Image (tube, rainbow, N blue to C red; front, side, top):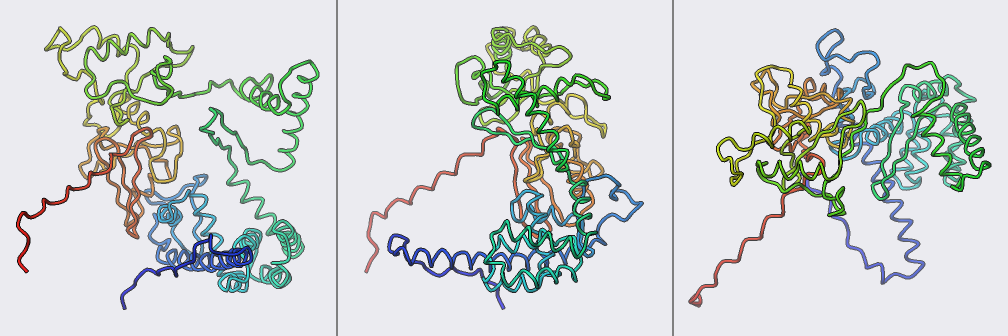
Length: 475
């Protein structure tokens, strides 16, 4: 038997449908989506069964998980690395992939009637997901009792009411499960930054116990109202944001030792100088002596200096956004004085700066670390994005297998994905000299990530049609 993908049935154009037909079609779309979600869950759980935990590093061996490390949960003996593979296969973030895996496991092992209703399109994905989320940490017997009580009326309840009813029933039948949910939430709690690329702002969010979150908000709100009462013209919401920022960055009295925030700002010199409003690059191609002098002059004209206790460095990019070199103001001054050793008149195109050289040692040099972290900025595993401050510099070709300690063979990987690359079987990582990383899962799916700011190559030109024959073929 040869497997072939399913071909969707043809549909009439939407403009042909009446209002009644559109409503019916929308309901059918929801039913089909429910059935496809159930099919996806079966596929996920079947693939998980092919990734046994026995393939993971055993306790006490190199690469074994350690207490406190953030690792993905594998149900019923499934590998801790499966969620990472699922995220790559679905091209989704790790948390979203983990949620779909947990949901599939709950449906198929604890909520069989909910899953059957989902397969038949009788229960929509959202309500089935709410039941799975609430009952994930309870046992199958309690889950079955809640399911039996709520499933008959689930479609008649709002999503919010269904969740509340399921939670109340579960707590009544299994208080320990509710405590387990709180423990799980505490283990996965974190502070997140969600950048808003359209207005230069970002959202700072924290996962806190409800009582702490309410208390924090009340303190911020009271202080913001005091500012408003003193005549501050800003809206109350803007004042709350201002107060929260001050409380974190300039705490008045606390038991913690003093710290200095480390902030990396990436800016284009053309944009800083008012020449351009869009990101760009500084010339491009080789970094010549004249190029360095021009860059130094522009830096001086802009008055860019290192902040107190901080540092200032420049990432010089090429025409496609690829990183050519990372330079400090001292480097720029030194290179400007030295110039090209072979052509003192600066009339050449000889490069006088570039990536730091390779080293024979296993550990990258400080200059290599600066270059690679400036190039990658985040963990390079597809859909991860962990900050470089929490990432390792990894040899793409392992050092033990002949991989060089060179920027062309180093990339940033968070500790979890570094362990996956080193110890999980069946994965393949390759990287081009300019930092384009390709990751292939054990199931054969390849995802490619480019360094931030690096533009993809232009599409290949279509081949020109062959010239027409001068003589027509004989008939």
